[in-house]
Length: 493
Ligand code: PNW
Image 1 (cartoon, protein in one colour):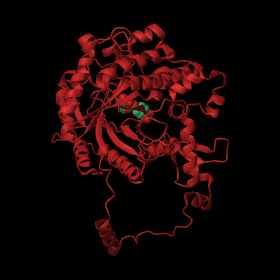
Image 2 (cartoon, helix red, strand yellow):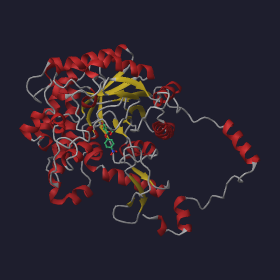
Image 3 (tube, protein in one colour):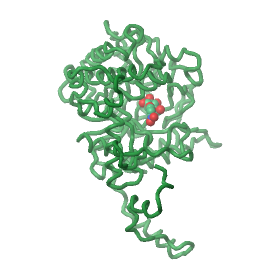
Image 4 (tube, helix red, strand yellow):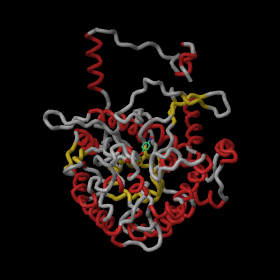
């Protein structure tokens, strides 16, 4: 809603300002300055994070491993997609990536240097089942066995994601990938196989990374593998099949995992922020969160699509059974949230939905990637909404970070103060959330090191460690020191 439509008085009311007097320091007065200094010195530090808060970093298989032909790995839809001219900005692919498949021991030392106590990685389905289903490839699993053992030997808890977008190509060819529920079933079989073999040591499993991105970018806009541009009704069916895959995998993981393992999704929930923090706007942002995540977290946590989602879809709605909904909403132990940016600033409105989504002004800032609009408060609101709307008792921030230009200065250091600015502000908001009792139990920074950033190739660097993609040399950026300091203090540095 454009603010110019409000009179000053109306705006004051909405913002809850009418009761506030003006409290501006007299400009240029030395006295005011020294008062401010004293206040700053006496300021009580913000409370730190809970004492058992888990700090980690995150990566995904195709973005770092390389070695795409090693030890019997089959092709994935990303190998195939990257072959298409123009699909990847720099015409690159994940053939070598950051060579983590061979350098994983060294990379675990990087985590240790940060003081991180947890690591979120993904397992490449085409390494475990080169044909997507059928005969497993034990050599493929060996890599993850070694990785997990090495993590544990270094005091780092493994958090495994089962699907971070690298679908075996054979499933795309055979069934049309996620357009068919045969893929949802194959995913559950793969999840069962992996959990049976890793859950003696891996205690936390994420099912699918960001259902929404794989649905929209992969199947609606064609910007991610498999590069499809499906009709609205087919997109809704893909969305349903992906949610079904999540639910079937939750059941398979429980049935095959050791007692006490925990499972949940890793979603980038559509983030809705009260444009001005008033009770009415907060309620409107909650309503918007529930509606705009209808095909993802809402159906997973409520076991039904919202009335508005079904009404809006009309004939293009997904086809499903009541049993599907029961499977999709199988109980989970935590919700993983990838938090990057605000999707919407919300204002309460007297309309059918109860909210208005404010358009983003052209002047809204962005980080190096033009899509990444910084809004630190999203780190407070998304977990708060999720905890409140669905009574979720455990949340992990499964990704948060930014790319940067990351140019070395004359002294060779990468002073990535833009990344530090971004992280400091987001973590301050996370500290607000945990100190108010929002049950966030850990944070995984995206990413440990620069890597293959999907259709942006190697042009967007998200790492705490700079990677020279020619030599595979890893060098800490200044933000690595910031993160190490934050972990050491268990409070924003
Ligand atoms: C994530 N958004 O994707 C992915 O999980 C990572 O693999 C990826 O490298 C990382 O973010 C950085 O891009 C995102 O629109 C998808 O808010 C969508 C959004 C953010 C991140």
